[in-house]
Length: 263
Image (cartoon, rainbow, N blue to C red; front, side, top):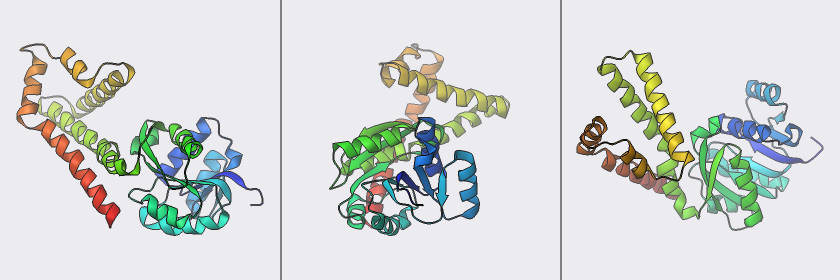
């Protein structure tokens, strides 16, 4: 391709496509985005669906999103350096800024920890600056990720905690949803009914928490009448150590993230 693109998205998998769709939905011109994807069938699918340039080879662009598998990220970043991008955003889990900065000397690198709800435009991501990244580079990365959810800025040392909380967090919610559905079935509800009620309850509660300025503790208190049904249910959860289990889950996931980053 003769013209230099504004943005090259390296990796057309689920997260890469989520970012691509979010950017286009938020007004980025499809003609200024290129996607690098090695699988021929996937190339055709992305080109037809989004009207973007898709190539099996690396593309020259001012900005780059690295959305490849972690074990390939350093190699792909080093190969991308030949095209002299100004900025690179990596969404590869566990690939540290020291690795990215080493593969991309002189380039403004931003590392992100997104999560899978980005696939439906409801992601939560944290970004951290590399050695050459400045405020404008963080602004750029935040604009990209804001197309699929909310973004916070942190130092890299905090990204392991982010991994334990929001990176792995959707799986915790899915496990709770599974348990609620099963509980409904055990109480005599049809599985489809239990599923509808459990999913909508989680969605509604999350929305209620996100739209106001009241804390989770305040909202919980609102629905907990003394001696009532909710109080009985919450007592069972506390007796079973659910709060402590969630604290431990986030801690263990964060610890595992630190171990992987050090390996």
